[in-house]
Image 1 (cartoon, rainbow, N blue to C red):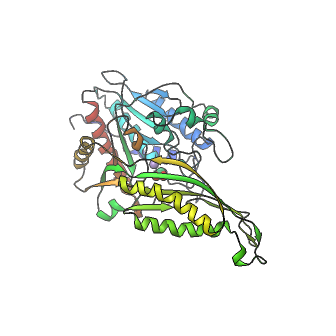
Image 2: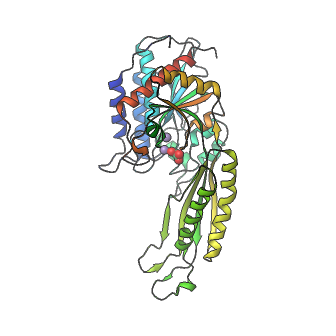
Image 3: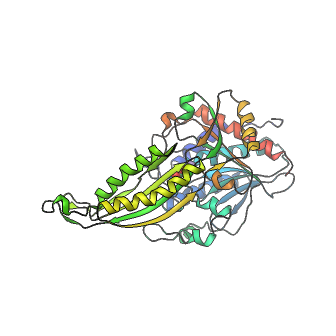
Length: 409
Ligand code: GLV
Ligand code: MN
Ligand code: MN
């Protein structure tokens, strides 16, 4: 790295802690579902941080938030880094926040070191990456990449029937700007066990596996638990239990795939009533395009078969479909060389989790940097990464952003 910047490590760690406090409850991690009050609070907090740094703030139609540090060539096509502020339910403090605050720390370092770069830098926080409240997930980056019409995204409804567009307006984050990154780097915790298992300190992410989601309902007949003979039941939960086994078998059959029934709501949900209805979700993922294609083909069949075996009616809606991507070689090689400037314990791997980079990839040269997750835990309050690893990741990001920003656009 020709240009050196000084990173304010203490400030970065303090920012992580402060942001992690938004939406936090004792023993429950934090919950900042997309476009909730807590997400709004996190957004306002980030805007204040961006303002303190004198960044140019832009908000686009789906509420993606950008803070731009102009380069010698102006503000066009900024070299961008970021992630998301929204979380799953009972989340850790790092998923999403780390990438946003890592980027902010680099821009702060560039500004405070008086470093002059050819191209603009931007920190980005994309709307609704997690997809827990509104589907599809990675909504902000999907819209930005042109792969989901804005109007369709704004019309997405949560389970209370509230629309994403209305929530965005309510929070004051429905903007009119348009920012098109010229390159994108996303810093993230791995959220799995591979770096830790390999004793690696930095992961060079070669790509992201495909993700497909369905929202489903099985309808049977609620009935008395004591009087209904086992062979006369239409037990909707029995259908889901059966499906759960079929999905596990599917994941065992299709190489390197995973399958999850993450939300299962049994109705009426009483000790002495045969479940008459279950609403549930299915999440399947695979890295190889053939495997991903097989999963998408087989899930609807498995849903129908389990329904048939238990005399249930089935409703199923495809909620998300993110294709597997592989980042360009030139970008992964850049991350690799930046990583090796900080450590020789580097592992190349694919991401098991979805990220905004999955769609930024369709817009501009993109890559990702991972740091280890203790015990491979994430999407839970126990999520943790050592401060030394977090800081190393930020230094790798700084090297990458500066290298990209010094290139000709
Ligand atoms: C987001 O974190 C996902 O991978 O579902
Ligand atoms: Mn994330
Ligand atoms: Mn996540």
